[in-house]
Figure (cartoon, rainbow, N blue to C red):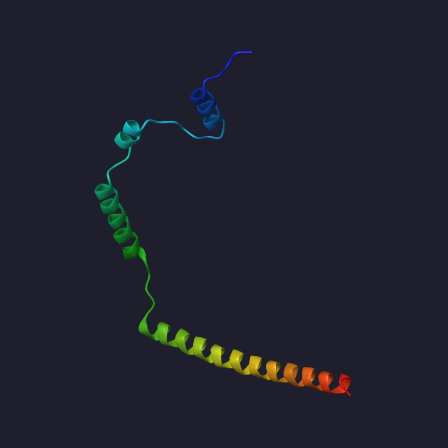
Length: 98
């Protein structure tokens, strides 16, 4: 049986899983530097932000009122449910502890 050098075995395993092997120097040549990538990111960010359709002040106020009303309604609902369950549990404890 022929011995396989460890680096060859690792390369074969990496390629099998879709991992490409590239030296550090080759990787550095193919990737833009950090400053250029940051500039590209900011340029793309600005471009996308120009495409955003922002809500009007009236729309924001209306949705804010709906959210606040829902919060209070859910709070009241859960307070009633909590009170009912608490009383039910107290009733059961009192009934079975006699």
